[in-house]
Image 1 (cartoon, rainbow, N blue to C red):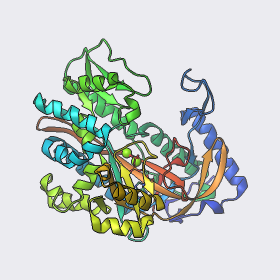
Image 2 (cartoon, protein in one colour):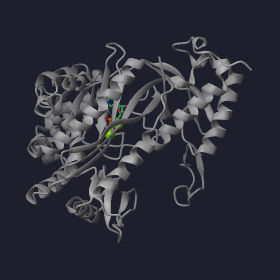
Image 3 (tube, rainbow, N blue to C red):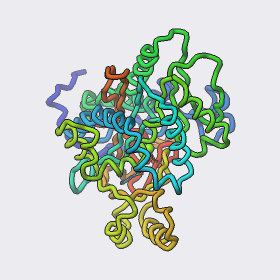
Image 4 (cartoon, helix red, strand yellow):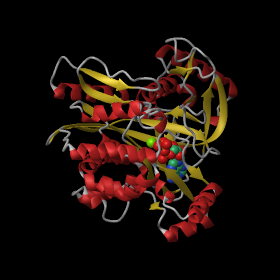
Length: 444
Ligand code: ADP
Ligand code: MG
Ligand code: MG
């Protein structure tokens, strides 16, 4: 068998729908076997025992059969922006007045944000300082088709999901392109290696080292019933939960969060990092002159600003008028994480009109954002062992890791990526919610 030379990989973009059904079956079969062998699996939703008994009722994670084409220049842009966003979060987190002032109206109408701000206020009263600061972030983008701009959807500072599975999907795609190179003529090396999971683990370990007490542990706060604060001394607390109101069913959880924040453990994220990742702060940072408050380097400011889509607060009457007239061009977002919370289309108009009629301050719970329209591409989506052809849009997330101890920045890197591809007709498709699949990128 002859091996392909670099020049033989001729196709800059290719249409997976043009692949013969028999070949799809073969690729899908190998992909499913690989997924089972390498742990590209999740709990089977329909099984009662899934999630309760380890190793029982697993199914392959939903994934795209082949990687999605993505322009190399935009990929580089997203990677370069990651350390700047890390630094920005750190600077914003230190500006207590900016956080409190920006969220002051939201606080009045959003109970969850208000509780987070209360913890933040208590830390200010205590004059609590976080010397060692750890951020494991993910900045998400869509590539706007018309303007060809890579625009930020949001910046996650808490519980950035899928560092583990995203690495596996990249590996799966590299394997498939290698295995079927004679048929597909795609270069496996054009799927960037993904080190998100090792990168995150390494930085967690470095944070633990920085804490400098070998008798301590790293604690991970998880859903749904983790209330155990442990009998061991904790060096690092990683929040895989705590970002949603449902993670705090009673006062007990709020007390636990406060206790953790008061402790000298390194928090990932601290309450300030958590607040810096809210949609309201994203919108405030997009205002003219806001970035200059936190970053000095002009190039850095330009790189960050270039990623900002239109973002507005709902007291902007001019934009409100337009959003009522053309609601399809906007997305309305409350201060929530985890998907499924945004408002689209005619609901944008209805909600604005309702808020205006109410005439109270409830509008402060939301921000308004320009709707981004990525190019629609054909893809083959694998779910429950079955392949589906679909027209899709994609969202690229680039992970960022940040660790500093006082003035010493120990880590500030981009750290792997997550591509999510969803059926183009769905407004908001979480992978867990069943609309999106995990994907990787093929650089073109
Ligand atoms: P969450 O923190 O809940 O993930 P996001 O801001 O990421 O909130 O919104 C969830 C999803 O909604 C995104 O993954 C994306 O599919 C869609 N979405 C969000 N903002 C926009 C936008 N401005 N244009 C188009 N789609 C968007
Ligand atoms: Mg989010
Ligand atoms: Mg998101």
